[in-house]
Image (tube, rainbow, N blue to C red; front, side, top):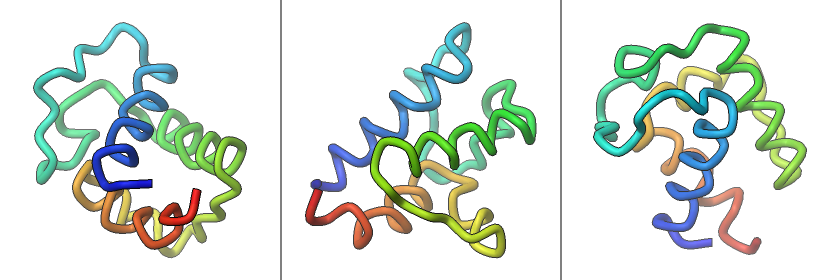
Length: 83
C-alpha cells in the first residue's frame, strides 16, 4: 500500500469507530485525540481493527507512534507495503 492508501485506511477505520466526527480537517502532525472525541477505548478499537483487517500487531509499547495521523502512516507503511 502507498502512504496515501494507508492514510485513507486509517481515516476509514477512525470514521467507523467515531462516525459522528468530522475528519476532513484532521491535521497529520497533531495528536488525533486532541482533534476529535476519541477516548482510550476508541483508540484500542483502532488498534484491533488494524489487526483484524490487515493482520498488523501493534505492541502496547508502540501505541504512541500511532498518536498522530502522520505517525500512524510512518509506523504502518513498512508493515503494509506489500498488502
